Length: 211
Ligand code: AP5
Ligand code: ZN
Image 1: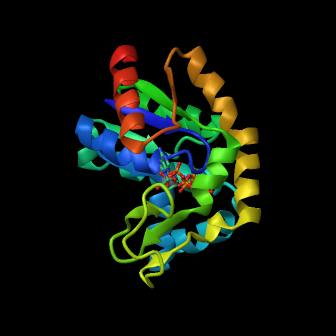
Image 2 (image 1 turned 180 degrees about the vertical axis):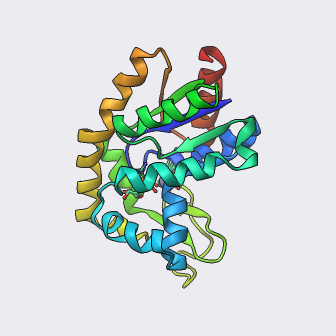
Image 3 (image 1 turned 45 degrees about the horizontal axis):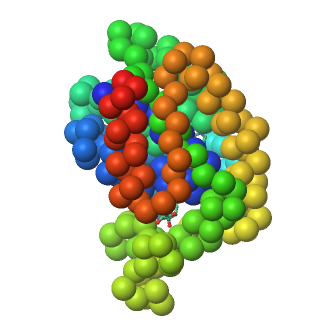
């Protein structure tokens, strides 16, 4: 199965991708996670991406498309994949179609997670990540054992001013993708409000019906 997850920042893409990918037996490929691990490792890719990420802007297509192409060329992606956070504009979507076309394969579906701006702000402002395990928590919805632990940090781009730019970038550049995929008959839209396990159930059911 070759799938794309699309939705605003904080919609729960990373959280759902983990469960859906495991259920479907495909690798989860998250461009945000790959960028963040490059930033943490101080690689040339990370150094280039950091200023865009800190501002809440998209990293240039050339850099992102190449990074994804390299990842999709790895052996584990031959069985399928779940892309989290890519494509994020129509140029990236066209590039993905072109690359998959070369391999004689195509996307099976695009899952859209639908949540309000109000919920996005609630989810992003309460998000905390464990330094040691990488696990993502939420202070209210999925609280860590010790909310004051030194092990927990807030993502640099979860500051209020960066969140508002990320929402703007989503509305201007990523939301048009929804129409692009609807026209291709690939769009599967679900309500992403509610407990994580409920949303996963909804997603798997909708994907089974539509793909
Ligand atoms: P990226 O990491 O992809 O950020 P994003 O799209 O803004 O999404 P988030 O990771 O913030 O949210 P999410 O939807 O994964 O939510 P999560 O599951 O964590 O990208 C970061 C940056 O990298 C971009 O701004 C850009 O600079 C760059 N980049 C990445 N891809 C790019 C591309 N293709 N092109 C160019 N640049 C790119 O959940 C959020 C919180 O909510 C958590 O605390 C979680 O516990 C909680 N939560 C989850 N589900 C629920 C639920 N059902 N109920 C209650 N709480 C929930
Ligand atoms: Zn994410």
